[in-house]
Length: 408
Image (cartoon, rainbow, N blue to C red):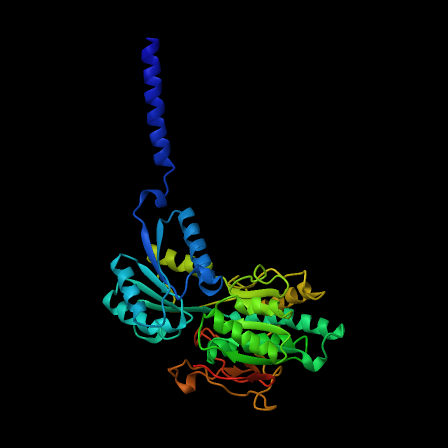
């Protein structure tokens, strides 16, 4: 009898365990995985652009799985702006991905034809601007108001320049900033202009030299550009490029730096003050969740500082000027409240002292109708305005910024 009781007890415990497991099962554990594709220009080893994108995507998928969505990521890495992007999108779509993200400016034209072949798949071109207007129901654009983050980084840079001036290490006219840019078009121009305006808000004597490298991510070219800028007197280096070599070059020469996409203080602890970056996690999370839930996503989306999608990394207080932490916190608060408008036309001039009174919000193909896209009103150039597009379109050359070359 005792033996029978033990057998029955074991059986009962086993059944209870099965029901407990079934009762605790989430959608992620009990359903077929939803595949999501990602076509990226470099890989995580760049410690910059793609690294930041992958961190955002991985964090979004981790949260989706925690929330009961079974999502699997498939990544195709190391693509140039060429037909391999078409092949990668086609392969990911054929593999069953319900949404495919493309992370570089020049990928859009190679992604678009695949959207026609797979109308049931959602294709997202990040930092681009044509998909929202191409007449397809399954193509999308997204970017963020990163010029706000650039402005805040500029405040930190300007504070450091002021410290160097006050300590007698440089004269006011030697407050020269060197900027390593990828290409001389709107996305880069907008960001570097916002950065310069942040610097000028605290260090009026500052000027900026810009060297374009003709590549989104080439560590050798970026280092060479930083070297050239430092040789021309730059005591602060910044960048719109994908690798950390501008930071390490600044450290090598004993000048300072602010970065992009990722905190670069680990690579250049004696030089890099902080970086600005886009936090892609919220967008990825929401877009993928909407696809799974059958909710239509907006054709164009712009992330904001108010929503936690535009950030600056932790300040390197070991080298930052006194008061910088408070100054950047105030700048962030003022941007979120609307007190600071980065492209307030009373804060800068163009063409040797003229006020910017008119500029059209057009993409690289001039697709917007001229009577619908005037971007200057109420004394502000309205960058990444929701009724226009998320991708930047500010292309004015601000007085105080000197281009050393061009690269289209």
